[in-house]
Image 1 (cartoon, rainbow, N blue to C red):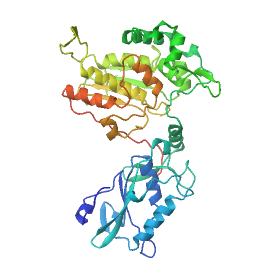
Image 2 (spheres, one colour):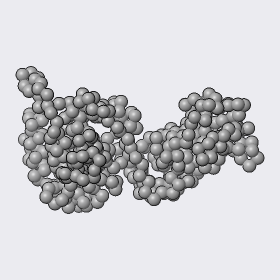
Image 3 (cartoon, rainbow, N blue to C red):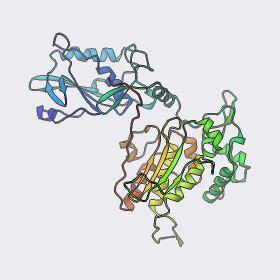
Image 4 (cartoon, helix red, strand yellow):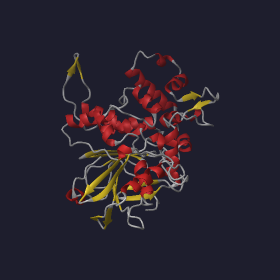
Length: 409
């Protein structure tokens, strides 16, 4: 709980994505849980959580103490409705989430709304997920589009998004040149690995590019296999919104690019080939200080490792059903990495490391086999460490909600 000790503390606050003020007077002025509390509950739960302070009037950014006379009534209404499945599909609240605060003899109710776990989303109202699911943007509650709700449901039931078997696809949809190049990198990273003795198709199966469902007997190429090594035609059918884009600029304040990589028909367009081409571009200007390890010169620095991790992280955590593209920017003053899909682990926890919920685990494993990418939960800290080693300014990690044509409540 955040603390409000007096009126000075209260007036120093303002509404935001994680803080909302509401009256709770009711028609008789004694106290009633406001109806518009529940869209805020849904919105904050579906985002990163937040606080609602009841008993405060907010108007054009100005806060006025109103208080709640019968605060026990409001508390009872809160928990009664939270436990009503006809009103809200999941109750995230307990006694520790609710606190009574008294300022100038007026009672306020501070409610902490936890962020729902991926397995609990979407949090929706009135048994109508497609119409009554909300997200929080700035200080407003916005209705989700049906597409957003469907993606939440998909994230809920699919721990890994890329092991799905694609019906109608086969090994002819794989770019053999890409898979052969991967095998060469695999051999360099793990020269004694037994999979290297297999034919390409058998190695591809071992990597997770082909899977058999033991319950149904169904088998076939996986989403990971097509996205990582597929031909452009196959990728377009598997993920119609997929697009990868690398842009290099020679000036910070310009949209003009001097080099670009995108699926233009001259190469496969798959994730592995995009990784290879883009990584070479990203590290072109990086210097490698002279350093020996066991008598051999080290060919790359911690910054090389950090950039490689940032690129792999962008690719394996992307939501390839999203409408946004993967975009990598190189400028004299920064490296930028953007992918579609909100983070499954809150940014502040991801920076500390130790916790991971990878959206595309098969792809992640494929990168690990060639020495690219880090084990679960250690990637983001390695990026920060590499930037610190190079004495660059601290990286910024953030996520942005894209609500398209949602309505504000």
